[in-house]
Image 1 (cartoon, rainbow, N blue to C red):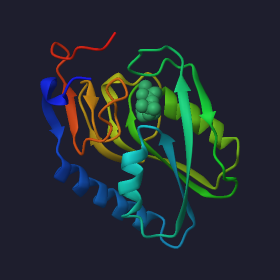
Image 2: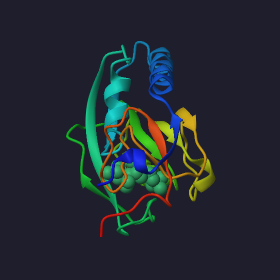
Image 3: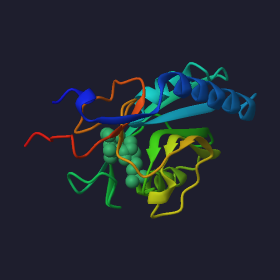
Length: 185
Ligand code: PRP
């Protein structure tokens, strides 16, 4: 894998801005769920970095769980609508306040599928917290109750988002210069 500096076009959201916004989201969540039970659900794998940082700002008592989703269509940069669960929740969500934690909502197919599926399990409430919202790309209408940043239609990576599985660890969101990025065959 190339050094990301060779294909980084520009930093879209730097580490300080990310962390400031995540603290604000945590404060909003604390206010909205005061006195209520809360379950945070991380959508693997992209949501993991955001989840870990967000959780540290959520002071209302909560439990956490994870689920993994896969969309058919290898190489696609957004889901195709053919979405399936590859790892399901370990907790029963019936009667609970559930907040889904995602790194990005793009076409909306992933979160739409998860919402439909989890709604059949009768949670008390079911909301979405997404760090990034690429509204321009939306193919299905989905609610985003807590939104970190609205972003343009660019190929972004870092902070949980991968480029061919690499660089999820970066502390910022960068934009790929596709003319400089050389995928390994
Ligand atoms: C990304 C992201 C969201 C989804 C958003 O996951 O984490 O789950 O795509 O796209 P959509 O709105 O078009 O459905 P990805 O399938 O890349 O898997 P990953 O989280 O394991 O990287």
